[in-house]
Amino acid sequence: MSTNEIRALITLIDDPDEGIYTEVRNRIVSLGDEVVPVLERAWEYDDLGDLFRNRIEDILHTIHLGGVTDRLKAWKEGGCEDLLEGALIISRYRYPDMDEMKVKARLASVRQDIWLELNDHLTAFEKVRVFNHIFFQVHGFKGNKRNYHAPQNSYINEVLDSRKGNPLSLAIIYQVLAEDLGLPMRGVNLPNHFVLAYLDEESIGGADAGQEGEEVVLFYVNAFSQGDILGRNEINEFLSKLNIDPRPSFFVPCSNLEIIRRQLNNLANSYQKMGDSERAEDLERLRDLLGKEEEA
Image (cartoon, helix red, strand yellow):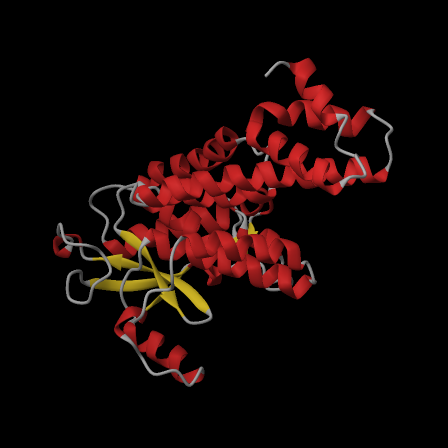
C-alpha cells in the first residue's frame, strides 16, 4: 500500500460512524509496522481534534502490542533459550523505540570488567566475590528499596540506566552476565523474592534444568542484597518467616520461561497498584501467553 493510500485511509479515522471507523481501524492495524511512521506524523502535525488523536494513539498501541505479542510467542516457541531476549521483549512493551544494541553494549561493558578479574584458578566463592565487587561496588547496582514496586524496576533497560532494580531484574542481569562468562548460575523462584543458584559444574547434565536431583546447588546469591551468599538453611529461614512450607522448587533453578512470566506478573501488579488497569491488563495477557504457572 502506498504512502498516499495510507494517508487517505488515516483521514477516515475520525468518522463519526462507528461501523466505518471499526473497518478503517482494522484495515490500518492489519498493515502493521509500515503504517506507524505515517500515523505518528499525522498525530504530530494534523490538527483534527482530540477524537482523531485519541484514535491514532489507540491504533498505535494496538499495532505495537501486536508486535510484542508476536515476538513473545516466537521466543516461547523457540524454546526460551535466550533470557536476555525475553527481557528485551518485555522492555519493548513500554519502550518501543529502545535501542537494543545500546542495552547489549552496556551489558558487554560490565561483562568485560568482570572478565578481566576472573581466572580459572579461583574457587566458586572467589569468582562470585569478584563478580559482586565489579557489579555492585564498581558499577553501582543495588536494590531499589525506597521505590520497590515501581514499574521501572522491572524493565532491564531502565535498571541498566539507573543501576537500581528489584530482586528479579537484578538477578536477570546477573544471570545473563554469569552465563556469558561461563559461570553456572541460574535463577531460583522463591515466594516474594528471587535469588540465584551457583551450580556444581560436574552435576550439570543434559537433562532439563530445574528438576530435583539433576543438579547440585553449591550456594545461593541474593542479587538484591549486594550479592550476599546464602545456604539452604537461610532459604529455609526465609520461608519460615513467611510461614510457607518448603517445596522442592524453592531450592532449584527455574526455567527462563518462568523468569519472564514472573517479570510480566510483577509488572502487572505494579501497574495495578498505580491504578493503570489498561497496562496491567496488557501485561496479564502477555503473561498468559506463556502458560500457567508451573506447580511445585
